[in-house]
Length: 288
Image (spheres, rainbow, N blue to C red):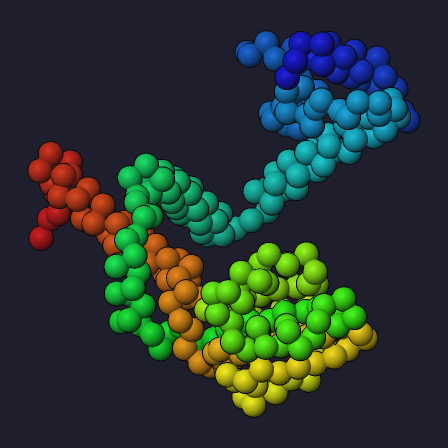
């Protein structure tokens, strides 16, 4: 916290009045810190308050926030003290055991994550990814329809329709150059028909395609005119729902699965190594 902010906060707590509450700060005899409130032997220090407050906030709003925080802290401590006084001993023991287990798990999980962050390698070669894919293909079923397609979208009044249709059908190197050189005349161009695209996303972008029959359109040029716009589309491939996704679509999913598996193996190997080191250093001995 910056020094000017501390001065302002101390002044606020020492001089502001909110309702019937007047703040006065006490110094802790043991630590020297400023004490704002006390419940039994527990103390709430100035450094624990939700500060600094937002710039421009009124005195009344600032004190309301501080008051609410202090009252909430006090109520929690009072309830805890009442609970400790009234809970049966067996319940206290059970809760303390749970707290200790949680504390242990918290430390161990943090240490595991630190080890993973420091030593864990998440890089995989293309061959490793392909090998995993080939060995686990049934796992990569598609939950949506994907298509490979090429398409041109244009205004027939601005582009010669016959010439475009002939070039689109033939799609030689010369025709490809034509489309690229005249791209500005077209509303949309998709000429790479080896890329997989989600069909629902495509029809969301181009609603005119929504009534297209995918099976009947495979490897055939389909022409659609809607609101003065011409769509020429040819599907080169279809993956139905439940079909096996190609490696291109499954790659990110594969990486996640491989990382998860590798993390488990890494932790197991680390745990085994730690046990062996502890035995060798006479830190761990199991009695039989």
